[in-house]
Amino acid sequence: MNIRSVLYILGILTSTLGCMMLFPAIFNFIKHENEWTIFASTGIIIFFIGMTIILAFKSKELKIGNKETFLLTFLSWFILASISALPFYLSNLNLSYTDSFFEATSGITTTGSTIIKDLNDASAGLLLWRSILQWLGGIGIIVMAVAALPLLHISGLQLFFSEQTEGTDKLKESVKKIATSIIIIYGALTIICALFLKIAGMPFFDSICHAMTTLATGGYSTQNNSIAHYNSSLIELIIITGMILASLPFILFVKSLNNINHLIFDSQVKNFILLILISIFMMTLWLHYKIDIDIFKATRIAAFNVISIITGTGYSTSDFTQWGSFAIALLFIFMFVGGCTGSTTGGIKIFRLQILFKVIVQQIKTIIKPHQVINISYEKSTLEDKTILSILSLIFLFIFTTLLVAAILSFLGIDMLSSLSAAATAIAVVGPGLSNEIGPSGNFSQFPDAAKWTLSLAMIIGRIEFFAVLILFIPSFWRK
Image (cartoon, rainbow, N blue to C red; front, side, top):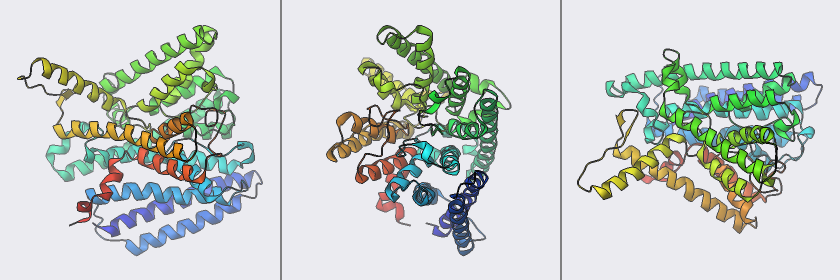
């Protein structure tokens, strides 16, 4: 284990986070809000701490192997969340560190759950900081998906690297180039989204914040009633487009620069779009016939909120906790879906659900014809048994961890619906729950501290997808 390399990169990430605190400091200064000193001083201190770590552990040879990658993955999310909590803790909102850590973790994991009761009490800088955290978390999870998850054989992204057979050095170079291209595309889409939101009538500051949280599929808003505040079908359409684009594999955006067919004809993308259309159709019928909402309004409401939940963004234009038991049950299922692998979304992901379906079909065929060898293929590539086993194991862990977290929350005195939906929304990094207390009109502030720490850890585990955490507890991982 090359600890020096891990600490060196953590120093870079820490100093970068310190620099990012200067942006909300500038906004607060422009708005003549005193909290600019909090961001400025904290940012400078964090920056110098990061630089000290960089200088202390700088090495001529930066070696990052599999072990270092997994350790860095967990430590980076936990440490950055701990540091990001400081502006919340020092702000005028009078939050405890537990609440501050929950808010920061929810931000950087792009979950979108909040403990802030009234966003009007937060300064412009603090609202911008929430959006920056989600934006950084969004690009962070994409880069992690491209660089780390293929090592675990749980994402399917290794299928995009034909260079695997050409040696490790060739593969690493390919990952580096693709990651750089993804960052550029991610930034460009954010700027375009902000521009369109401004043209659609959203205030300049709000358009910047919502563009960042839309492309991160994070869902933090600058308004208490989220996107419903603007009551604009055009704004909703722009955000819907942004959420869908952010839910597609960014690695395909890179490949589509040379050939758009990579994106259009990808089976994961086609199944994702099909799932969205079917889900909207089902919810629209329910809202129209059972809740008695006009068909056009029902379509508009269903489209935005269903896409928001499926993609794990967590925006809302309506309090869906009032839609009835069938709608709540559907939304609970949607929470687990997520978007495509290599996107900013959480959830199980379409690729893994496709493989699960193929495994079920394979088992049925095997029962009918026990002597026939039936392989599972994806995009003309035959999947290895270890890849299939890893994917099925992750789906099991996803469900088991959700139930375990729900059981812990219930033990802490939280009602069953709130416990189950809070666990699901944390593991799937969605944001709002499905009960009145933690739904679009509520927040998590009334939860006990033990529940907030439990959910914070669940967000991190769900964001980095289980195995990257569990592997650290295996004794053989630490042996030479």
